Image 1 (cartoon, rainbow, N blue to C red):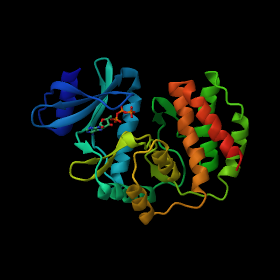
Image 2 (tube, rainbow, N blue to C red):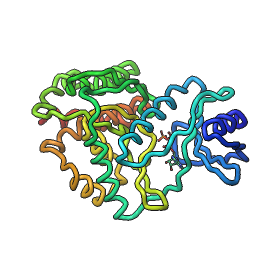
Image 3 (tube, rainbow, N blue to C red):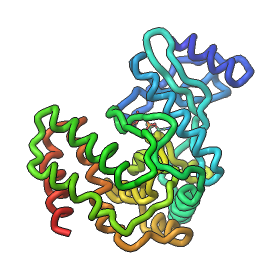
Image 4 (tube, rainbow, N blue to C red):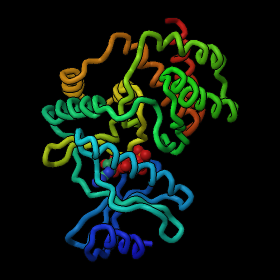
Length: 288
Ligand SMILES: Nc1ncnc2c1ncn2[C@@H]1O[C@H](COP(=O)(O)OP(=O)(O)OP(=O)(O)O)[C@@H](O)[C@H]1O
């Protein structure tokens, strides 16, 4: 496998590359991550089962589209595909850390600029992708409320129902979504889609980077909401974001609805430990 991947890297970069003893890099829980080097060049490689190759195709497309906005740094995808019985994606290697306050502020400003970039009149994307390893449906819709209701909350509730989940207010929350999003008319922003703290970092040169996206054209607030769900972003980050594109009134309520998607997904991926949290969020939303 590594010989094949080395050959594809060589083809992509137009010079000879032969990986020496790939080193496992911890961090991700969906894929196996490796640092590969020939002593001179370095790359980050993620490996999964061969039948998961579409996940890497979508990751590469998402990264390329974000890079094209020239707003915030993302790792450059070098090549991806199937080698032996595995799928892989090769990305430029970045020396990543947490960064200081200045870098966090810059990250906030740059994320806001990504969100201000306009390029679509509808919500969705050219391809569906994955959130964790769950399919994420991106069929186009011109109506954000319908998009969120059907492709996000409805889809996850259906998956949860099929695995026996007990969400007594599932129908009620589906019916309440139009009301919860009323008077909110977001422009489609190209969102990262999975912006927890583990998917954002700062290079050793102080440049903010976001990676491992589940991208689509959506309400920018989905990214902000997720940054708050598991923490990891400092007040400087939010100050930077608000300098460029202050959040709209009503965000605090929508935030719960947007994060419900991720908690339902966690239920579907990791099991019943997340059911209580999802039900509490649903109850909270139904009280508005
Ligand atoms: N281009 C890169 N260069 C160096 N290290 C990287 C790079 N991209 C990611 N990393 C590091 O590897 C870790 C795992 O990367 P990533 O989140 O892309 O993997 P994953 O398996 O898809 O993760 P997840 O389980 O979050 O879906 C990151 O937290 C980061 O520390």
